[in-house]
Amino acid sequence: MKTSRRRVSTSSSSACSSGSGSLSRNKQEVELGPVCFRRCDAMTQRKRLSGSRQHGSFGTQEDDEDPAFTQPSTSQVQRGLEKFTPAQVDQKTAEVVQYFLVKDQKKIPIRRADLVKHVVKDYRNIYPEILKKATRTFDQVFGLKLVEIDTKTHVYILINKLETAEEASRINPTNPKMGLLFVILSVIFMKGGVVREILIWNTLKKLRVDAGVKHEEFGDVKKLVTDEFVRQRYLEYVRIPHTEPAEHEFRWGQRADLEVSKAKILEFMGELHEQEPQSWSQQYREAHSTPDSTQASTSSQR
Image: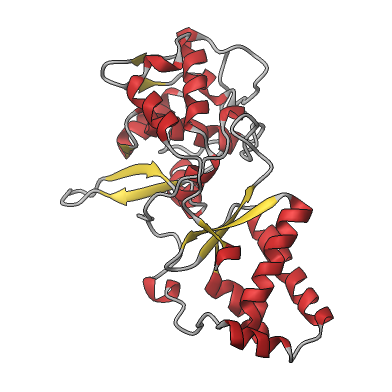
């Protein structure tokens, strides 16, 4: 299979070739060939939350602390509901649902501060009731689950609750950007959960995707990986302390932990190299030892 700079195929219909890359089981080294842009359907939900070590995702800490909003008590919500008609509450709920859906198209996590400021506004005293109704709408109408991935700064994302570990991921396998992301997540996982950025750039360069050259499909590759994927919480891009010039490393982000199955990545690697997933014993244990229970709290519990 030839990889074109114009379009990187992510088709899942063709078989993976073992000659496209090599991987050492002992040293857990990863070298991925062009075929790795295929079979991006090997990505599904996981229910695990990693600590937040984001690099430049949501502005300053002062903005994230949301000092102007205090979560109303149950009695305050009850008193607040007396000021609005059911129709008004339903209308505001619909606006909140629309806001989430628009943001989710670009995989942008939503901060409570922004939601209250731009949408909830004068209805802030009944915010918990509106969010509860919005959560029910996502669940019953759209098959989505509203998850709070950061309980300190109150950041939310939508995940597809109808998917199981055996079904396809929300990451669109026909989207070349998501194919690129899949390769990066696979390298990070197979290398133990954290890699220096130079390894990622070298891996992508072998796929004819050079971080220093504008790509016809991806544009500014470095910006896509270190900015867009980071803002979407698929990746964490963290400076390594005491390095001069500054060096960075990549880890899985919170959204990846929720949406991507490490077991499916191992299945993909097994097909790629014609080996059983158990061949990579360390990764196999990690992929199958994580509890299925979601550690992130859902908005209905807030």
